Length: 72
Image 1 (cartoon, rainbow, N blue to C red):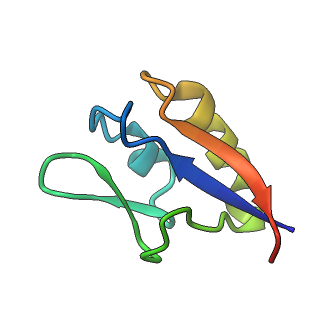
Image 2 (tube, one colour):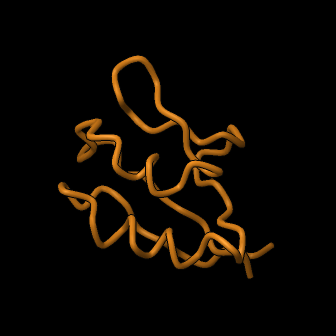
Image 3 (tube, rainbow, N blue to C red):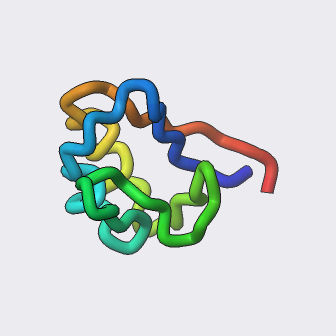
């Protein structure tokens, strides 16, 4: 199983805090919205980044992030 990060685009307001907490996983576009660096819709979260990803999910001001497990 692979842990993946889902961004709910209907909720995201482009605060950019997730990209600050997950710089290896997310960049930001010109408007502050997160952009997965891998190009995947739901990028895989490396084991080393899982604590930071959980922190980003808990601290998203509009609750637009969630982690889920998917087949590898």
